[in-house]
Amino acid sequence: MNTELAVVLGLLISAVTMFVINKPRMDAVALIMLTALPFTGVVTMGETLQGFSDSNIVLIAALFVIGEGLVRTGVAQRLGDWLAVKAGSSEARLLVLLMLAVGTLGSVMSSTGVIAIFIPVALRIAQGTGTSASRLMMPMSVAALISGMMTLVGTAPNLVVNSELVRGGTEGFRFFSFTPFGVPILACGILYMLFARRWLSSTTEGGAQVASTPAPCTTIS
Image 1 (cartoon, rainbow, N blue to C red):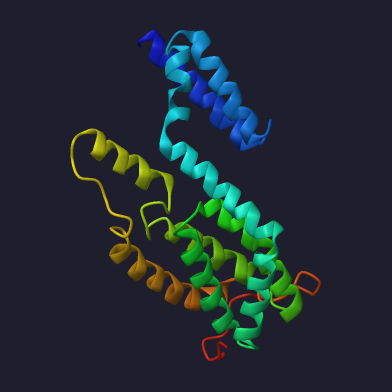
Image 2 (tube, rainbow, N blue to C red):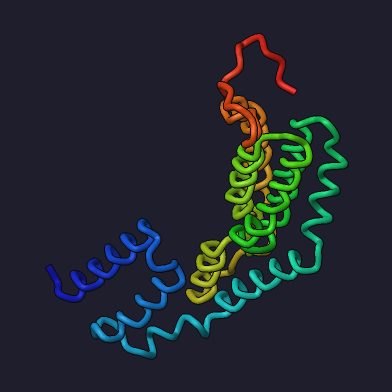
């Protein structure tokens, strides 16, 4: 096996192992790999830092700043209150509104940032309505994953592919080129979660756990 290939595979396996055991933190693992690669001679220092000059990196970082701004200004909290009011006592309506909100916001910023914003929102709603947090967290996660298919900036791979097309002299994607594909998938995801939520815990954390699968004749709210 090529020596350089073996070194890269070794570092990759080490990084994956550290991610799995969660020691050290993920950002520290990234910095360790960033520092280790130039010392192996596989890449030069210039090649290592070249990615930071990419506009996509700056854009992704800016999306995280926007997400933090939404939390600190109270926008996320007010959004959670609005969702709770609009949903009323209907868990199904709450699930649909939550997935639509996460999918829409996730289409214009990092899905990781969206999840960070909506976790406290979902927990507040669950506590206020007596709904099990898992019945909101799972649909929220699914909507965040699908949101990457909605727009050009929905997820980093979209931006990377677009950059490679432009670099190769081909016309890149437009901002809403992914939307005709993402919107139907989001709609299907919402319909699926309305059905699949019956297998999620239907009790709050403070109560006794109840079997999450209802009988076939049970009415789903």
